[in-house]
Every structure is written in C-alpha cells, then in structure tokens.
Length: 196
Image (tube, rainbow, N blue to C red; front, side, top):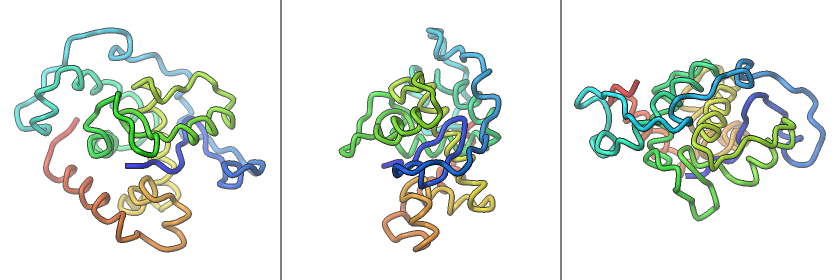
C-alpha cells in the first residue's frame, strides 16, 4: 500500500522529484486552489445517508468514515477523476482510515508517502498540503490519479499499477506480478459496489 509519487495541483517531471529541475509544470486540477473546504473537513458530524449494499458493510458501519464521501466527491470532481475510482483505491489502501500508517511511512486515507508529500509541497510551493489532513490526502490522491490516467492514455489498469509501483516502473516493465493483486482488487471493488 505505497504511493510512490504523489501530485496535487500540478504535475512535474520525474527529474524534478529526484533532485533535478522540472522541465515543465502542467496543471492537473486547476480549480484545486480555489476550491472551498468541504463540510467533512469543517467539523460537521452528520454522516450522509447511504443506500444499503452500496458500499462495503465495514464502511457503512463506520459513520465517521462516511463523512469523507463529500470530500471524495469534491476532489474527484475538481480533478475530473471518476469518484468511484478514488473511493475504491483509497478503500483498498486504508479502509478510509486517516490514522493508518504503513511500514514505509505512507499515511492517511490514500496512503501518501511523507517524502513524496514533502517533495510535492516544495515543487508546488504549497506548504499547506498535509497528508495527515484527510482532505489534503484525498486531494493529493485525486490529482495523482488524474495525472496517471492522462499519462497512460486513460488506461485504468496502468494508472492503478502506476499508483502502486510507480509510473516509471510501469513504463519500463509493465504491470509487475506484485501489482496485479492491487489492480485486480480495486477493479473488483469497482465492479462489486456502487460507491458514489
């Protein structure tokens, strides 16, 4: 459950993430900076009504986690990513638990690596993005999925593999055997549940 490269409101080249200068900055989610904070991050405690069977039972049983639904919708919409893809990916990553930390230090709902988040904050000159904030965590993930979809010609399988193993690795080696359960697991979640 590791996100190798995370991007928020812009995309930079791989060289920039490895200490080089970015050759270009391309807007991924142009409305992200102007987007209002969602009600889920403003302290509202009422969970949305969810149709029985629409989401995994362990999620429906957790009203605190259901408060993330409007946050997923907000950032997926701003980044023009199918909201179900962001929701299913982050369910696979953490079960929508913000307090989860992986053995590699990935944090939050969408399992953002601290080093990648710090690099992106520097490249974007945005010290406010904090993967420990559920909204920022979901924003980063949504923007990254948008970029991966663009970079893979809209191929969801390659975008998901890129989220897990890194896009450079996908380009060089295809979907690695270690990534296949990740890709098929999220695809099954998309097929099995209605999400948003």
